[in-house]
Length: 151
Image (cartoon, rainbow, N blue to C red):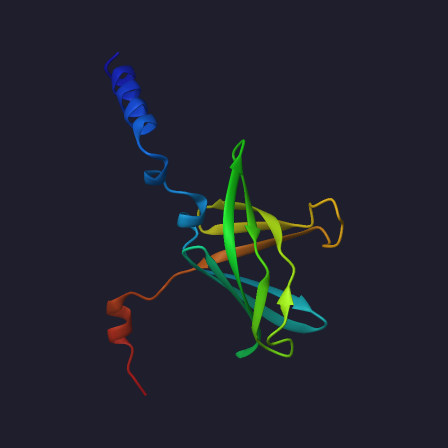
């Protein structure tokens, strides 16, 4: 009975909190995320950096940055599903530098340190159906940075 009472009190307190106090999926995604894949015989790495509502996407061929674009994300949730809408992208590095991309959206699901982006579900059919899996990139701690000799 004691556990039930504590649960009811805790649930009541949680429900009474302003919605801004409860962490959103976008808040939980803050940081760096990486995906690796093969395309046209090249081993590519995509790094997504989430900073507040800004997403920077960098594509690397080995250690060489070949593309970067930036978008603003807006999170929408319904029935436990998160959809990330993004505005017009701006290419800031690579052969398409200065060009803008179309706004769009993807279904977002984070499970621990794995983040799934499901694209191509919109009705226009312009984007092929794709599921991309990203892994969280752990940032080195201050102690690790200090322990690394500088060149």
